[in-house]
Image (cartoon, rainbow, N blue to C red; front, top):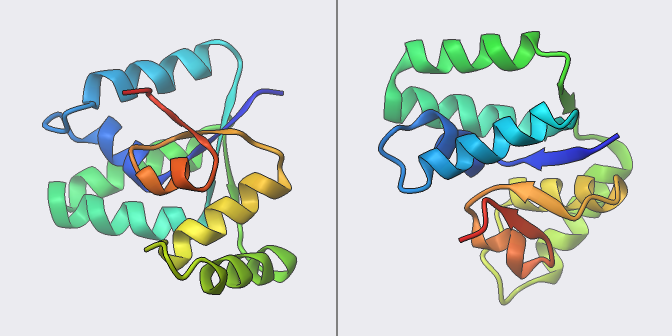
Amino acid sequence: MKVLFADTSGWMACADKHDPVHKNALATRNDWLRSGGTLLLTDYVVDETLTLLRMRLGLPAAKIWWESVSASPRVRIQYISGDILESARILFFRFRDKTYSFTDCTSFAVMKAENLKKALTTDHHFTQAGFQCLPQK
């Protein structure tokens, strides 16, 4: 099964028509799903995305996003706990020269555990951590 990690910035690029990569992000997401792939996100990404959608685009946009994500059989939400939480903690404190958020580190830990190489994101931290960002610039 093809799995693409979907980060907050990827979801935001898809949702916000004014985002500079909106069209490319939508095309990337839609092409991935059309080709039989699934999208993976974490509960931490859900938190960030809902919050940013509400702040930037309003509560109705956040509600629409949540309803589409939670109802989709092609989207999987992984909850952060146990070994993944510990791996994220280690990453967070190891990279003192980076400005990774803890949510970034949980995403990296999940991607490593799932052996994923690509993410729907515009966040350069994913490139710094060795992952491929889609859409490509």
